[in-house]
Length: 306
Image (spheres, rainbow, N blue to C red):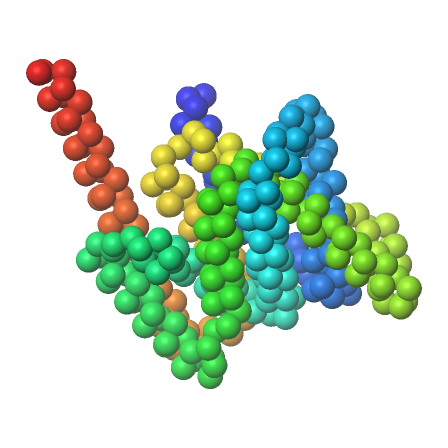
């Protein structure tokens, strides 16, 4: 199988797993969102350490210890992803799956805004148009909900910041997740011990199946991340940009078809505006990437001719 095709399949697998998360978290009830989050932190470390042990890949750790800036960035990333994970688990288990999906739909637009505000990038006209439609969609949905869609906004902003910090750290996926979960391990274990002493823990008290499902939270965190990494090194960024919509679309379908969440006409209008914004954004990204390839080929040809 060609390497690019394999990369696309890895990407589809990663985003499909992320998209089906809303089917998993309700299985962990009666555990609350914070308890699930703590188990996810702890068992993710176990899963990623197993992966590193199989790969016999430990040399990076000593080098990273000598780079306090990168360690600080990964510690910050750990705090940001904690917010993201916690809010998303709460969203799913409190019947706000559709609003959670909205957060990941608007995340690419948030990334563009971060590029302007934090990295002083300049937007193309179609990018400004997409951001404008995205803002309009949030206003329409705020009117529909009777409040700002805070779950969606927190998810989009936190995941955007997480990506920005990870980009600055520039550390591999498995290595990064190891450090992040190490940072989170202490608070996670402390909370789980507190729950156990308070008689409020569910792990080990709801049967072996429930305990295995809680432990499985680590596996379903690590596996799609590794698939994503395998995809990202094999396919162009524009392809990853298209594949990323698989996850929120599956989450949206889970909310509408499985969780049977209410979708009044005003909410459909809001989501339609979001999808229009993403269509404009995607078209502009593909067109820009194609023009860049044409210019590069032209420069290469000129160099050969001269």
